[in-house]
Length: 343
Image 1 (cartoon, one colour):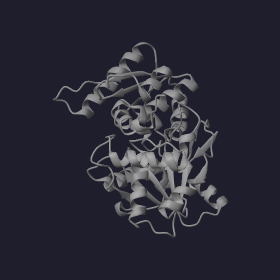
Image 2: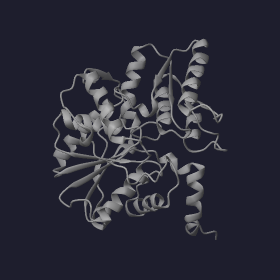
Image 3: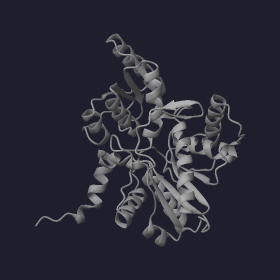
């Protein structure tokens, strides 16, 4: 049983995940570009949330829970991975989302069902805020299952709270060891910022473990005050674990120029970045998270805005089932039809 900042976790991941230089992308973009392959983790088709779930599973076990319940969008990657670890450790699982039924069971919804996860899609009523609808639905679903004899353990959206942040605190230390082993100079970590737990775990470890690396987040959805949110999140983590490093809002470097105004929206630039990565390196990105993040890296490199002295390490956080969602897939089908030949 491993422990970080006094909290235990269940160790079920195939870590360390690979850290590899992408030679073709590096040459064409004119930067030293590496990828940390957290998409290759070993349950539920993989992804970054599994590092967080090592801590949530341990806490749920300690509390005698029998069911894991979480929230997100209908196609939540975190929900899919919660279902995976629930299956692995003998829990029931459920996801609650304020989202319409997309008209088909595909992508993460299909995987949720394969793994036996109950999915509750909450209809909007035009009056109640989504946050309230979600809160009410979670209470209703919890009550329903507890009346059936289950002990429900709630995991927040994206696993992004003080406990979940420890997953990427661990990853920062893992990365530091790999960077030293490979002799990578001036490491500059680039990671998606959605619900922010991954970014915050990295930022917290870098500051408090005095790690020799820079960190840039790429926002993939609008925030009213992303730096303020980061500072508030860090202060909660700092208080929970009695950390010493003092950070200010301006210490959180998060680029918000590439979110394209919405969460999980189809974007032509992002699809082009996905095709580029697939055709140059054989690595698949997703249209919501890693596609937006690599699109930002590619554009910044092409503009000459990434200093050549740094080595850029993008964390591939997974999310690959997202390419199979209807609203993304339909756009790609049109663009990729010229690759289809009937003979």
